[in-house]
Length: 191
Image (tube, rainbow, N blue to C red; front, side, top):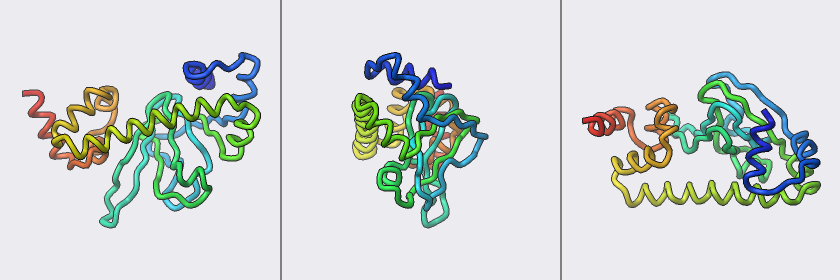
């Protein structure tokens, strides 16, 4: 499980081989069942999660009781409620395994110690946050500038693996559609 993380880190920063075992020792492997929660809204996000297998979603429940998915994380992606994690305060989101998943959890205190011991990892995490922030900015721009149909088509072009793996009701929630409207767009595309 840890080899996936090691390969991912090495894609972005050169870590001496002798340091990798020390770095990986900071991570805790977790095996999750389908629909198992890693975090429940209102609790403190104590860990940052690296997805080895499966995928996660981040969501909240609105005033009407509807779940609103705001983010997914597939293999080799990170996920946390970063405001909660960074400040160790109650979070606004829940994190759930959508399918059976394997993740590596990096506890807040462990991350702080690891970054002090291996400062080159600051660069790795900065690069991960920049990539995630850029994706978020592109998504927001698409919401303002694209029709709903074009939002879906753009998302399907950029992330075909999501469209194939994510249940339609979750994808619709993420895009801000009803599942029925997403069905109409997909049917129109097939015609």
